[in-house]
Structures are given as C-alpha cells and as structure tokens.
Image 1 (cartoon, protein in one colour):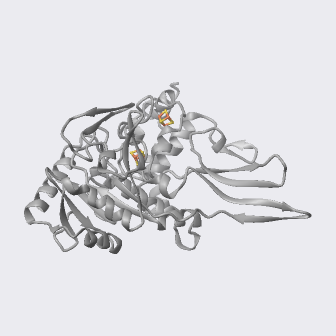
Image 2 (image 1 turned 180 degrees about the vertical axis):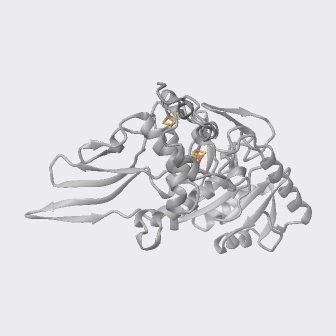
Image 3 (image 1 turned 90 degrees about the vertical axis):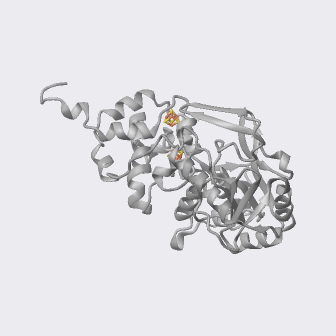
Length: 379
Ligand code: SF4
Ligand code: SF4
C-alpha cells in the first residue's frame, strides 16, 4: 500500500543517479541487480547504467531467461537466484579462530567488519523473507551476533512489483507484490518517474536529502493500480487454508514417492530460498597446527550429511528429505515461528533443475492418497 504523506515523493527517472549519489554521500555502498552470466546478481552499483536497463526475466519451472525488451525500465527484471539472505546470513562466516600458545590456547571472535550496505531492488517477497530470517536469528535472548552485525548495517530499498513472473505466488501468501513494511525506502517505477516512500527514519533522511517533489494523488493511484494488476495477473497460488494440519496428515501419502522419483537432492531449492536457514560448521586447521578456524556454512536438509546425527542418518532417502523440507516449510514452520516458511517468491520452482513446483505438489498431497484408497490386502 503506497500512502500519501510527506514521506512520499517523486523522482524523475532521468535523475535516478541522484539517489545513488545521496546514498554514497551518506556512506553506503549501494548493491543492486547487475546482469551477470545470463541472470542478475547483487553487485556494487555506482552508476544508473550499471542496472539492467531494458532487460526483463522470464521464469518457468526449471527455466530462467533474460531478454532485452527495449522499454528502458530500470527494474524490469523481477529477481535472480539471490534473495536478501546472503547479506545478513553469510554463505560462509568465520565464527572464531583458535590459536595455540604454549600449553594453552586462545579463542578470537571474528565479528564481521561493519559496512553500511544499501540493497537496491529488493522485492516484497525478499523483504518478507528477511523479516522471517530476523525472527529466526534475532529471537529473544538468542540473537546471533554475526547475523545482527550484518543486519544492523543494512539499508533496504524495496522495489514494488508491477509485473509478475509465471512462477510468482506472493499474492496468495500475503507477502506481495507491494512491500508494506520492513523497508527503509520503497520505489514504484512508473512511466517517467519513481514514486519513493520512506519506511524508516533512515529512509526519511535520504528522502529529505533528495529534496524531491511530493507525490501527487494521481501518481499514488497509478502505482496502486499497477501493483494490484500485478497481483491479479499471478496464475500460481498456494492454498494454505488447511495448513498445517492437512500436511501432517499427509505424512504417509503415496505422492511423496512420486516427487522423490523426480527430485535429484541437488539442494538448489534451499540455496535460493530466502527463508531456509540450515547450516553446518567446519574446522579448518592450518598446516602448522597452531591455528584453526571455526566457520559456519550454508547447508541443506537435502544432503545426506545433514541428516547424519550421532551414528545414524535420520533422513536416508530423498523421499525423507523432500517430505521434511516441504512439511517444515509449509506446516511445522507455522508452529515454530508463527508464519509460513514460504513467501511465494517462486525461486525454488525456477532453479529446480527438474522443475519441481511446490504449488503443484501441495495440492497433490492434500488429495486422497492412491495408497489410502486401496482395499486391505492390495499391494
Ligand atoms: S519455498 Fe520456494 S517459493 Fe517459497 S520462499 Fe522458498 S524459494 Fe520462495
Ligand atoms: S526439489 Fe529440485 S531443487 Fe530441490 S533438491 Fe530436489 S531437484 Fe534439487
């Protein structure tokens, strides 16, 4: 929802560089979508021309393509494989180093160096994913100091979606396509201007420094209409009405065997997911035996190793692992964190090499199982 207030203004597209300059002057390194290797990746953006101007993405199960539309839009690409996750929950993070000294040792914490990073181009689903990761890593008395240090120096610039991909279903998850909270600034790209809304006092500071014209009711109406039409155009949706109970009841459903026959256990879906947080730890001693590094790395519930606990693998088959992932994501996550672990970004559908689509798997699992329809004595 874009609101009319002094926290909302319009920036001509031709002046977009001013936003980058103001952020730079405030000490932020601006990171945004940049075309790289056939998709977009988060990279440092210094000039407007660094953005994927005129490009748009087409996504389908197991398929991602960029094409030039020539429409000159700065944010025509919806998203690439990366969500906001790598900025706060680093793919590899040294937690401490241990150094030997005579008959003792010393542990040296390795909190990340603080760097003000402004992430430009986060989508509403990404912002919702970040809010979920905050619940996981910053919970009560158990805040993770490494995550917190990175998170504290993040400035989030959301871009409201006005075009949905074939794989998007954020509207049915209540997380998009417009960002409603959790951002410092939110942009909506219109024909010749950006509507900019501040969502925090830091965002308000940037807006004041930009000294732009206030938004008009007509520009707000146009932005609202474009976001609503984007929501209406989404063809995928997830019906979560019966969750979590219905998925727990489907634990012995025959469809788990069907999806296990297609899943490669490659872990792509968990790497691209904005909310997945499985990790492992690794010791890396140096060759002298005087120093070792204790690091945290992203891991996945789809790997053999992740299910290995104390002499036994608790999820030895792919069926066990896919069932664990989907049941956690859509059911037990709700018991654990009070909300679904899926924000409807569709990345796991696009980046699955065999195109497994949770919006199709869930309804199949909630239908009566072939197995449960069999008469006693039938195999
Ligand atoms: S489960 Fe899939 S669609 Fe849902 S948030 Fe994760 S990657 Fe996105
Ligand atoms: S569901 Fe797809 S992406 Fe996920 S582990 Fe299986 S094959 Fe890989």
